[in-house]
Amino acid sequence: MTLPVGFATPDAATTPRPLHIVDKAGFAAWRDAQSPVVQAWLAAQRFDGSAGTAQSWANAEGAIGGAVIGIGDGLDAYSYAHAPLALPGGDWQVVADIDEATRQALHLGWGLGCYRFDRYKKTTRAPARLVDTFDAEALDVLAACVRVRDLVNTPTEHMGPDDLESLARDLAARHGASITVVAGEDLLAQGYPAIHAVGRASHRAPRIIELSWGDASHPHVAICGKGVCFDTGGLDLKTAVGMRNMKKDMGGAAHALALAELIMARKLPLGLTVLVPAVENAVGPDAFRPGEVVATRKGVSVEIDNTDAEGRMVLCDALARACELKPDVLLDFATLTGAARVALGPDLPVLYANDESLANDWLDAGNSTRDPLWRMPLWRPYLRYLTSGIADLANGSASSMAGSITAALFLERFVAEGQRWAHVDVYAWNDSDRAGKPAGGEAQSLRACYAMLKARAAA
Image 1 (cartoon, rainbow, N blue to C red):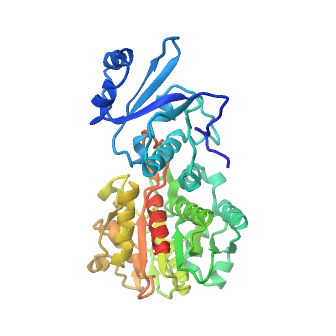
Image 2 (cartoon, rainbow, N blue to C red):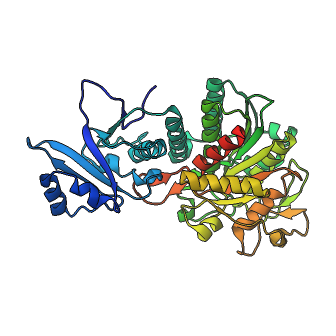
């Protein structure tokens, strides 16, 4: 097993330094059990076990003798994420016995705290290393989170529709999955007109990527991911500020592919279909225009109110295709609306679902994995905001009301009656550096979704 950066297994040739973990409530009892010299040093540094803190001390020879980190919730991976860069470099090993759930949170948090996107700019210091024995599943979950971050952080010149296809083909080859791709003008011939309309102005052909894996006798899960590799806004052009980070608009595809990789690596007893509509929403002579009426795979005509509401357009064809396969559960991830960020901020993804059991299972998994999301209503009276005078539906509205809800309602129009479905509107981004959350791409609700699917598969 190849270990990620910041991890090492026990080696008789090296002696890791002792690492203590405390929370504020237990700090006094732990401190009183330490040597007088350590107690005096902690007092001099005013260390009190607060969450997100770290303190090392010297031994009698003047070398680093040990360290302690302060944490909050012991089951929250991010409680430990500050440690790799807050501690002096070198190898560290936790002193006390910890239960398996806490150990997995520690491992995940340590790995997330070590993460840096270094494809173009190399890091200047190595993180401290955690010495332990590591569970393969925990490392696979970490790898999935890192995969999302790497994909979202990669600039569009290296992460366009063709690059997403190459990535999906690589995943399929490594895990024995099958893959089909429909691209360019073939999208029209094979019934994906909305995907074609959004992506036709780019020099890189739009496409839909379909990956299939697993035993047909197992429960079938279909996962769609919005793959808008760059979003200028189209002819309804974004401002410079609004366009600056739009390499992240394929964050839904990054989640779908990373989740699929995790499911296949862990060999969950599921049948899996992943659908990624991969496009660039570009400005050009052939760009789709406000006021046009676009056909869709489902046969629902859509008037284009705003070319910057393109994500729902590519997803509607993908959702319609997924429903043709009649999966037991249909999920989608999408960086769909700024309105979701206005409602809940950058850290909380928005969940919509047409099935109570599915919604509750995902919310419960979010709570248990400390990977939270928040449910919002499919308030169908708001469909009035998407009324068109010349088509079955509009893709936007002149009103700024309920923007995240109306986007979800638009998607629901393309979900077959009786199909269990959940949609997550993710930000997939950290605006600033925090412990374990460096500025840039971020996996959100992926761990919760995996835990939910694992539990449902086992049941």
